[in-house]
Length: 176
Image (cartoon, rainbow, N blue to C red):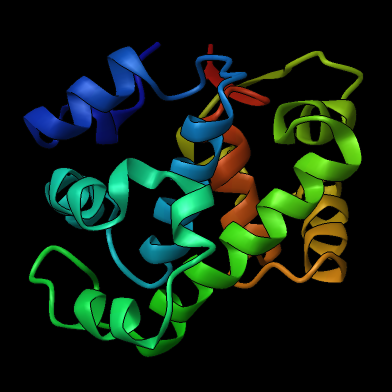
């Protein structure tokens, strides 16, 4: 059964049908979704999807190696870019997370290997009777959140990480 939010706007429908809960192993996409989920904190996912293309351009198409080299002038550029969410801490976290992302890649060979290792490379598929039964975090998102924070990541609380895991297909919450 389809989630009700998926039909609220064409951008949400497109995301639901073509990305959400589809397994991804591409590090650039994994970084993009980590950034977008962090930017979404306190906002609607639709707001993020409406700004996504602009953010892609502003952030060198989520090229974490370029972003890790951003300096104060790049930060200022982002803070004045209309596509960006104008939150100082969120924008700073993109640069911080790019650096931490690269360190994870150095340690594990790829971010993909790191993140999927938490589930032995298998998605977690759970069926729920009602959409309201779907949790906003769980033991896995809490564990990953704690590990990411230990590695220097920002805006990676358990709720953000639960959404992230759904975005990249590790968690697949289905309706009966």
